[in-house]
Length: 121
View 1 (cartoon, one colour):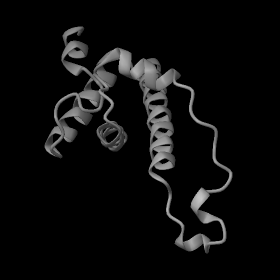
View 2 (cartoon, helix red, strand yellow):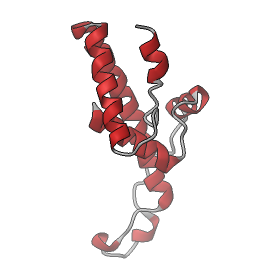
View 3 (spheres, rainbow, N blue to C red):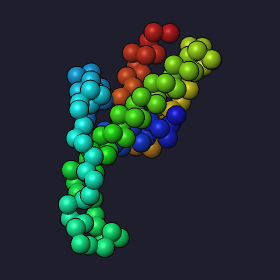
View 4 (tube, one colour):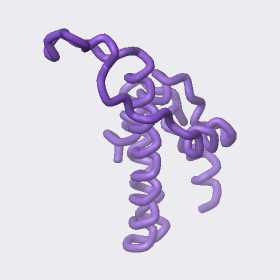
């Protein structure tokens, strides 16, 4: 879970998405993405190995990845709660958060407001 949360935090920082802002997360999750580009516009007539991805396309891919990872994490949390219960799930999330902090991330950079989450116990 720690590696997943770290990737989520990095993508959120790169995309300037505040994962602690419910409106920003809701917008990310429901925003209609641009249709896939069949061919990179700079690749016409160029060797494919020398074509770089446009910033817009890279950002769209990162947004899609962030959305997918947030959904994956949610599913993992639900599965853990179902299979392991509240205490085990909470402890796993707490350890993942502590791991992120040791890596230099700010608390909550991954969008998990664990202070509120742990107060529920």
